[in-house]
Amino acid sequence: CTVARPGLSFIASALAVELLAACTQHPLGAAAPAMTTQSSDADDDAVLGPVPHALRGSLHGFTLGHWPAEAFPRCVGCAPTVISALEERGFALVREACEQPKLLEEISGLVELLEGGEEWDIDDDDEEGDDNDDF
View 1 (cartoon, rainbow, N blue to C red):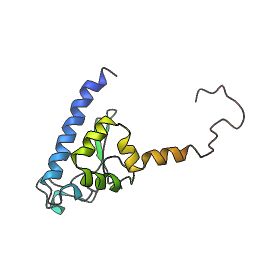
View 2 (view 1 turned 90 degrees about the vertical axis):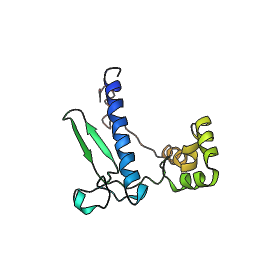
View 3 (view 1 turned 120 degrees about the horizontal axis):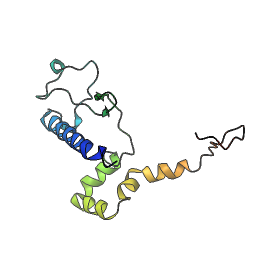
View 4 (view 1 turned 30 degrees about the vertical axis):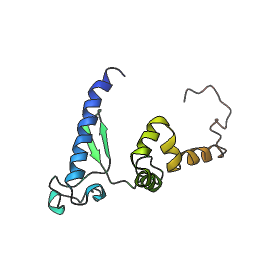
């Protein structure tokens, strides 16, 4: 949407900067523990307080929520295989990823996961045979 995106991009980039600042100022850096509902500034040694691991915004209520989330083992940003490849190949991996858009998906195992989903026999047709539904 050409109306919403320009405004939302500023919000997203501002949150990204705040998350980066929170991570870089935390004593454990990127390994900072997830912020939970029990977390408070008093519970944390970080200068900027606890670090949220995930943020979800809602324009309906103009709210911003956070919750701890387990890392996805096939994440193109932080999967162990991606981290190992980055440590091994350094900036060459970044260059290759820019030249080959599917590279990180292959390294992380996401391609294999998605291809494996094609093997599932999922029939989403209405059992009553009414194919004229809008939903």
